[in-house]
Image (cartoon, rainbow, N blue to C red):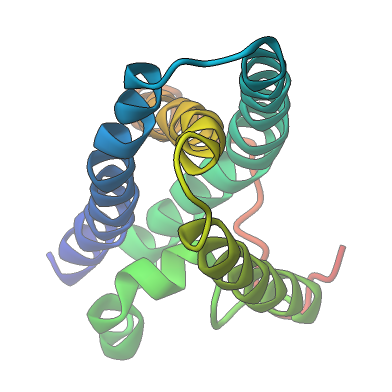
Length: 170
């Protein structure tokens, strides 16, 4: 029972964070379209949205984060430890009890995201919204990917993705 609680808490905790970001950024992104956008605004919007959908949504979430999160939640379900369950969203993301490479990567990515948020938050409209459209597209792709991989893990006989546990650097 503890493992199931941990898996659900890990998955839903991360989903809440991502959905909260989408909810917060969507009005800013939509507000961009109330401005008189010039050709270079549209160019930035299109290129940034394509870039973010591919790099954040596809490469970041779909190819890496989502399958690993679900693998870690599945591991947590089958191998519950109280602290892992208590901090399940952090466990699922890979902040601890992971390979050194993964821990380094997740903390580095977190710092990078915080820096980008601080920079973008200081931009005026329509520039902030132009960039937020891309972020929302990537986060939305990530949310969908998390659900897809969760369904695959629950319905498949075997789930082939690594939870990247300690001692298995790679």
